[in-house]
Each structure stands twice: as C-alpha cells, then as structure tokens.
Length: 206
Ligand SMILES: Nc1nc2c(ncn2[C@@H]2O[C@H](COP(=O)(O)OP(=O)(O)OP(=O)(O)O)[C@@H](O)[C@H]2O)c(=O)[nH]1
Ligand SMILES: [Mg+2]
Image (cartoon, rainbow, N blue to C red):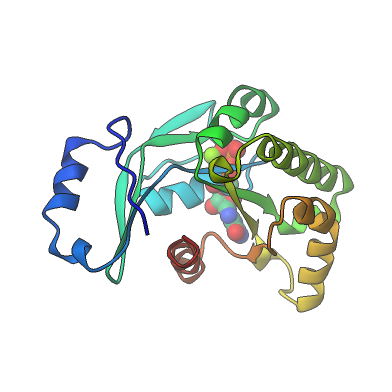
C-alpha cells in the first residue's frame, strides 16, 4: 500500500514517529484526511473526539480544529491529518461541507437512525445532503474521489432489528447506489465497542 508524504499535512513530530517506528516497516502506512459530515447532533464530534483523542463537549459552533494523530492497528498505521470538526447547522454546512469533502480521503456521512425512520423532513434532508456529496464525487477523477462511509448513529435508540436496518437502507439506497456506497454501519457512537468497530473498519477498508 502506497504512502503519500505531503509536507502540507505532516508535522515534524509525525515524520519522526514514522521514520523511527520499528513496527512501521512491517505493516501498511497511510496518511488520510478524514472528515465527518451530517445533520446537527448526528454524532460527528462524538466520532472525531474518539478518533482524535479530543474532548470537545456540546454542540459545535461553526467548526473546531482537530489535531493530527497516529492510529495503530496491529502493524498497520494510519496518520489522520489535522482537520476540522464542523457543525451540521445549515449555515456551517453551506460554509464548510464542500471544502471539507474535497479535502477528504474518507468522509463519514452520519445520520440519526431514529430520526431518519420517524421524521420525513429529516429523511429528506439526509438524502438531499448525501445526494449533494455524491454529485461532488462525480466531478472528481477516480483517484481523487472521496470515499464515503455511511454511519447510522443512535441505532441504540431503536429496537435494533434487521427489519429496521432494511427500512433505513431502503430510504437511502437509491442515492447510495449512485455513489456505489455500501450499507451503513448501524452504531451507537457512545459505545466503545462500536467505536472500535468503526476504527477497525477504517483499517480494513484502505
Ligand atoms: N444514544 C446515542 N447518542 C449519541 C450517539 N451519537 C451521538 N450521541 C449523542 O448525541 C449528541 C450529539 O452528538 P454530537 O457528536 O455533539 O453531534 P454533532 O454531529 O457533532 O452535532 P453538531 O456539532 O451540533 O452538528 C451528544 O449528546 C452525543 O453524546 C449514538 O449513536 N447514540
Ligand atoms: Mg459537533
């Protein structure tokens, strides 16, 4: 697996960590810009806090800077570059989402499972925003496309059945298929095991 080193993104400290880390000669090394996008309160900050070892509390106003960090899984290493945790408000979405998406190697697109099932307006907004992101990808060359990973958060607030998963998927399937996206991970972002699964999937998917 290739390793792209761009001085823009890697701080000296991380370069040193890479160069002198004996583990890194065995496993894969990858540098990624990872964003989390989605409607207010879907769980973007909760996910970024976990991945970045940050501790932002409360709803995000505008955006927060998030640190670069080196993640390890077995012999594999992923360096998440510095980024922004953006608010899901309409205003912030207009200001930041396009830019964040173009910068991203991986974009977690998160939505609240329960709201999607029970609130038609919420569902329309989720589908609309996903459609917008998919369309941005269409303009990109294959190698420059952003990989979208769907996360159905707050799944713990439902019964957790396969039928619910199917109904959720049916609601976004058409748009997801256009972008060749796979089914969401159905998760509780407040649960450590689910967060670990997301991290493992990140390593397995690159
Ligand atoms: N039960 C449950 N609560 C969650 C889940 N994900 C996030 N939360 C909670 O939902 C609330 C909103 O989460 P945030 O991570 O702040 O949401 P956000 O997407 O960053 O919201 P904005 O910054 O306002 O756009 C917090 O109280 C989280 O603890 C989940 O999967 N299940
Ligand atoms: Mg937030």
